Image (cartoon, rainbow, N blue to C red; front, side, top):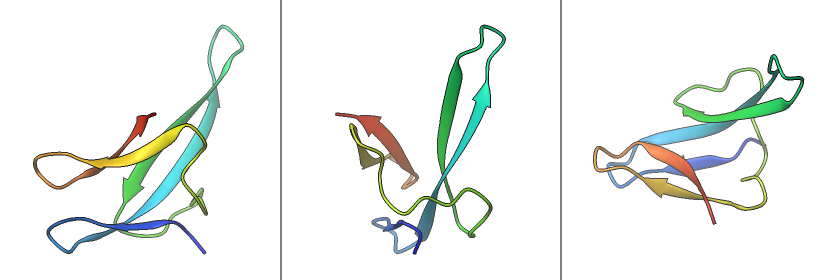
Length: 64
């Protein structure tokens, strides 16, 4: 079951994550919210992060 977040306006978003390898060889994970379930949907918020909402109502992940 994918992690969902309902914002103050009543819109539901699903948390996703994608990993990519940088030129330096490090792996970087990009976290994002989408209105539809896509490949890479996550079951929970990653450790060390929490969900916050922007002024426009878009959910974002912030570090603790």
